[in-house]
Amino acid sequence: MFYGFTSVITGRKGPMLSHFCAATPALFILWIIMAQVAGQEDREKTTALKDLLSRIDLDELMKKDEPPFTFPKTLEEFEYAFNEYGQLRHIKTGEPFVFNAREDLHRWNQKRYEALGEIITQYVYELLEKKCNMTKEILPVDATEDEPTGFIYLSPDALSNPSKLLVLIQGSGVVRAGQWARRLIINQDLNSGTQIPFIERAMQEGYGVMVLNPNENYLEVEKPTKSPLPSPTETSDEPAEKRERKDDKEGKKKKEFYEKYRNPQRETETERILIRENGSSEEHVLYVWDHFVSKAAAKNVFIMAHSYGGLSFVELMNQRELEVKNKVCAVALTDSAHNIWLQETTKSTQDWMQEHCRNWVSSPEPLDIPLEPMMPDCPRVSAGTERHELTSWMSFDSIFRFFSEFHAKEGEEAEETSNSVTTRSGSHKNKHQDL
Image (tube, rainbow, N blue to C red):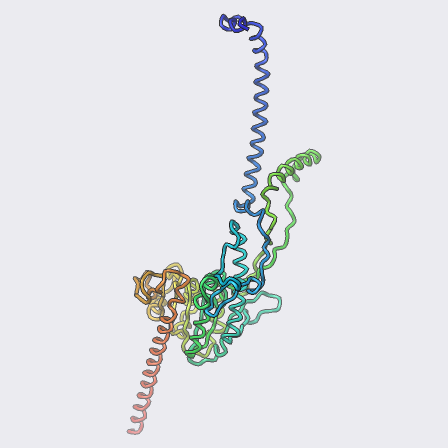
């Protein structure tokens, strides 16, 4: 041993060093092979991980233990009901609705919330029909049996009332006819989240009422399954036997890797079939104007539009400017999403909006306090709340006062016109007698 060691120092090769030098290339080659194998395994794992992340969302990793998406179909089955104050409460505990029914299952909780929302939509439809005595009008008016349809709600005198007509236009999103905000209905009460108080007040004051449904734009149907496309390996020039062995090997690895994270609940893929001439909020408002509002007997039409509904109204003005000016008396907007620059409104439209429109916007200022104008269109005043979805309800009394003022002004102008005609007629009669 010492001989071998001293030989290294002296430069002479002893027996031990000779064996070591002879074995070194083999060990080195073995080390290289092991490193290559380990590197190959790491690369395969990295490739599989990248493939996994490209196929699924990170949230999908939490879905394995997710409960099935089967929810109650009625409020009673949900064990919720509206109390005498219009608040949604649990039948047994009396507690408000709880979104996080199951911790760490956000997607399941969201699906449960959406299922409850669909029940709320049907509940509001029932209120419109039974409490407000409104009827459903199918759109398009000439719809065939095999095409998708939407609808609006009309009061009994919506088309025949000779004096006043109120048209309600909601914002965008999941809300349907009769709703301002689903969140308010579920978490606050029916008065703040639905249009029911506006409808009842309007009817008491002698208005006919039309409730538009600008988000009912399509029929959702299940997407037909597509036959799988051939994989790149199927079109390659490799021998079939070799290709099968390779596919089996890769498939086994992927299956083992994905099995841990696979999603047992695959949601049905759907596609949307648009409702003819009602495929968007803007199209819907224009269609209802052409087929209902323009044909109504009312001399004075009043419009209330929330959020995106304000944008749809401005688009209506762009398309039917003269008709709107001749028929509409006043327009109340609440946190309107319109933009006269992007929507390219005319100067005459902007001038008319200055005189006939008012926009109640979310603000920390007290209700009805005038705010600085952002555009040269309609005056802006505070809605008395900083919450966007509450602007309509908080402006409730102010809006009807605004409408009443305009209606009184229209009455005075009509009376002045009538007196002027009478005076001219009397003067002409006197001149005729003198002659």
